[in-house]
Image (cartoon, rainbow, N blue to C red):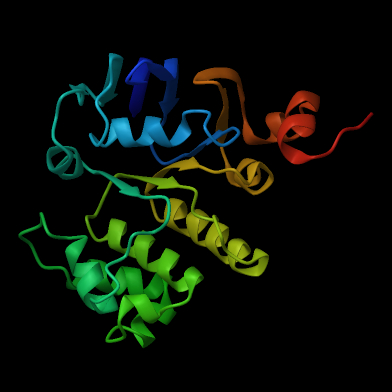
Length: 235
């Protein structure tokens, strides 16, 4: 289990994250929803070691992750699919996937086949330069690259951002498949409707704080969530 307790993140004098606490149980999908700038992405970046926290603890099992380098955290079984995908445009699809496994010393063939099974289009385009792929294909590549580290938990930052609605549907189906195959998912997503539909549990973050929590179904039917994030209301 990933356990975040009283996490605080400051950028200069600005408090981006204020005492956030949440749990990500093994083999579940947990989502953080909230408006742009609420502190969701900063939370993920802090967990993976890209942003230094100013308070609180992040524990993976019994191990405290605070202060560890990103490559150490990845070795512990946590990976991040960053917002904006950040594929290497001048490298082939296969080269990008192998970059995701740069810390591994064992054979990659089994995991490569697993990624290709999840994303048949990546197998078809394995020798194509990543920069020539569509936005949806680049997102698939970013997820596949993270899976090549053979993680126990994969964190995804805005995977639907900038994608056509039909592609978004595909991406969320893939997230469910990844989870069903045994990988825990921590999802940050502005598309609250889609995120809550697949989430086992969810936390609403506003102004750097957790303001609501519950199962995905509970928050989907919550009137405050409907008004603020789903654009609907029973009233």
